[in-house]
Image 1 (cartoon, helix red, strand yellow):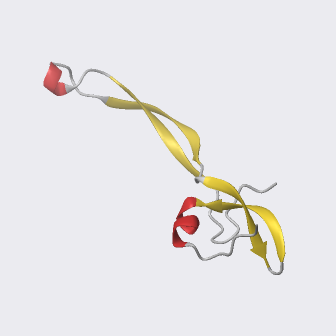
Image 2 (image 1 turned 180 degrees about the vertical axis):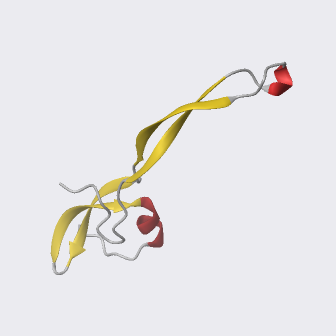
Image 3 (image 1 turned 60 degrees about the horizontal axis):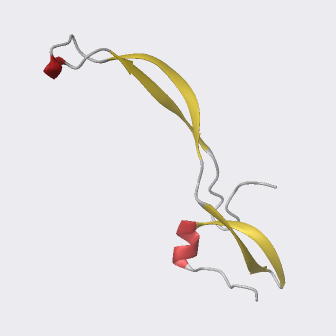
Length: 76
């Protein structure tokens, strides 16, 4: 099961998490410094909905931005 939005194709993005060490200059230290970075992932806000895909109802993942736009038809 793919974790991507069916309508816009939005999926996982990769980024970095920064670790800082040291006391801030305003508190009397020599300044905060970046020590290391680790990889992390940013996931979109996907919701599972039953929509009409073509002529048949299917249960798919749609991001909340596409739900707010409302450019799909809901299957009952």
